[in-house]
Length: 336
Image (cartoon, rainbow, N blue to C red; front, side, top):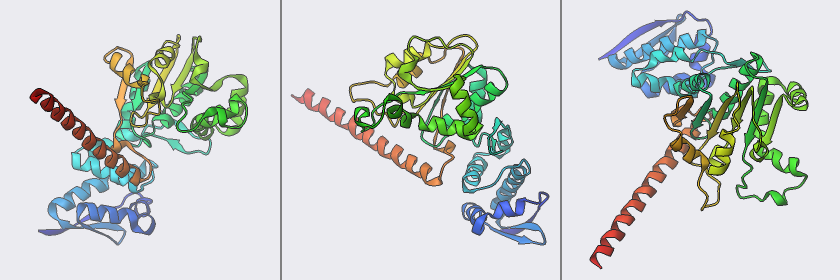
């Protein structure tokens, strides 16, 4: 049965945020929930099957709360809200209200998914945290935000950001410049996050003083890092030896966050990933947190989620083919 239900707008900015540019937000809601959404006398009217309208009404309540808390609505945030609605978890959106830091431009950095919220909690509660997942899930960005927050609160006296300089199709030896100039492109994403959080001028001063250090992983060897917040990025490209070396650098009063994407390993074929080995060896050890992000936690362009899903399906099919081929080979050998 088709019904109409009025939703009263109590937040002045909600109408503009709900509809979005060229009505793209509201069109997404209409298509997903199979309803019509119209504006009448300053209120939202929901039209459709009763169950769909009830779902839309729950969604409106949560979206209006989101806007009241100073957040903007876009296709990505609405898609995520819809996925929580279908899981019956729409009320959990309020858990994403914590502000970690305010960036140099005045932007509030907050978790955008429940996975990101769990990641932040793990970093807070543990001395070492592994954040593993696909591109666009905020692994590095949020780790840098947590490092900056700890630094501003005087919980640590240094921030150290590092990543392995693995040759992903390029040869370092043929790149122009001295060692620093050859290595810097590999560290660029870390610099970018720092510049956004603190501003380039402040980062420059901290780098000069050694309060902030951005360096390739090889430079960590032989050191003990006390009172520091250390981030190892792109850890899927560490060898087991490098990973052990890094983890044993942790000193008193320090935290370490290790991030990586196990679907993008650039190591030579015969080399195993230190990230994969470490998460297996260190499973269940007190003081070490571990989170696996999924495509639901991707906060980039919505196409990134679709690309990740497509690759996951492809990899699953390839794995199934390999298993089938192994089975056929075994049967063939038995017959011989």
